[in-house]
Image 1 (spheres, rainbow, N blue to C red):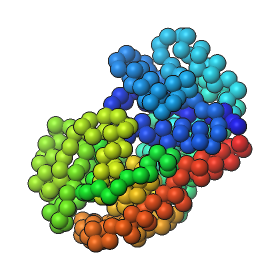
Image 2: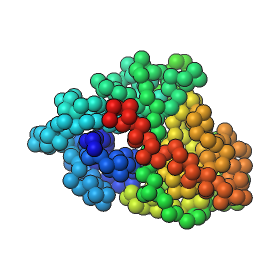
Image 3: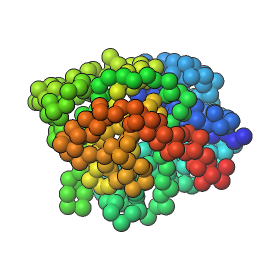
Image 4: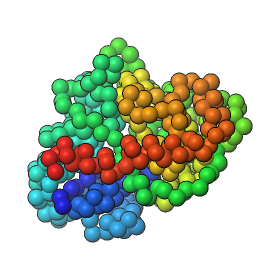
Length: 363
């Protein structure tokens, strides 16, 4: 048994059940493999974040397995004691910036879950986020490939996938509607790099605004969209999307899972930057749909080079192809549901994904 710490931002996003699952799938998966796990978070200001973190950890049996670093010096000392001698630190997006705390761990691994964005920032000199780590993992499986536009920065990137604790997602019956959860813009701005602009989800999704009008089905979309994007909201609603406030369906990890389980399939549009760079990124949310036996229809980011597509996971390039994919799922949902579950089992099961990460770390 090894000791593994996962560092990430959970306390800073209270009420975001889907975001919590990013870390829970790692923690639950590592515990399932028999390892001693800990979650490390930091919070620079007050608010409800500390209570939210405690609630999520307790609900999943990690009430004694997390530390929250705050402005209180004792919290940092507690984190240093907890991390001392840890075999592996998985530092999600480089969130643990404290070099002394990282140095307490035998092996540190940067885990990149937003490929292209942070690499371009660093290449442009706008940020330095990767720090001094022993290993660099990325869910951008194509980084370093001939057709991938993500700068590798001279680092040796180890491809990995978003793990799913399969047993937490099984048991869903057949739901209804082509759903997803998304942020329209998020905290990032488009990036000007190497003579072209790389946009966000808004810039990719506008091409699909009228898709629901082409298919006899419901299209619930839990969308975090700002009031300033009123024109886009109106276009989506006129196109047939049923816009839902994310807090209504994903305020806790349990409600997020219920929303996915109540769907027939996912219709997901990635950020334009993931698509345009051919990064190979695949959504942790989509992996949870697959693990729930829900087919996923999405734009190819280059993941078709490493994942099976056609049944259960359907790649589309435009609204016409997306409408055809929806009709295919409606015509034979059973086949696509079984294929979705099998893709999750063979490619995203936390047992497989995390064993490979630990192997790469020498554990």
